[in-house]
Image (cartoon, rainbow, N blue to C red; front, side, top):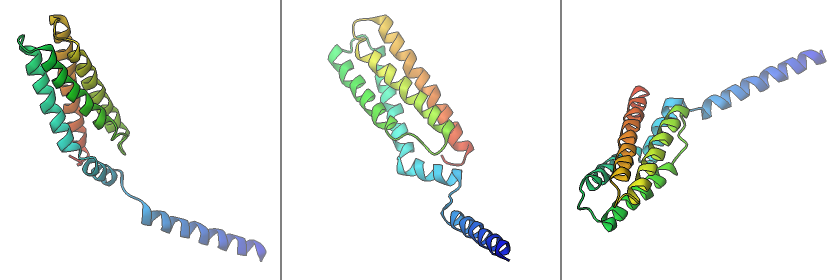
Length: 149
């Protein structure tokens, strides 16, 4: 008789636990959509891409002064660091892709900052920024695939 009471109690406990966990569970896609919205990811990434294009333009213009490059590239680096602070996302692969995009963008911004008098450093900075652009395309594809874009 006592054994039957224990089984009934355990069954009730399991059923209650499942009911409670179902109330608080959120699907992975739903969590990612909420994160994309709360992190303002679409607008922030669009701004980063716009700023990277501006940096590429400045790098391509040999008349851009060191002060101008410092300003453009420091802003880009600061924004990349701010964006990085929004990680992790609820999706591991999205986090990895964004980490690569933000890190490469930051590397490009840092190289850009010191590139004023060196065509080789300007080219290296531009290469980083192009790689970051490709990484942002991968992020967008991942978010679109998951319905979170």
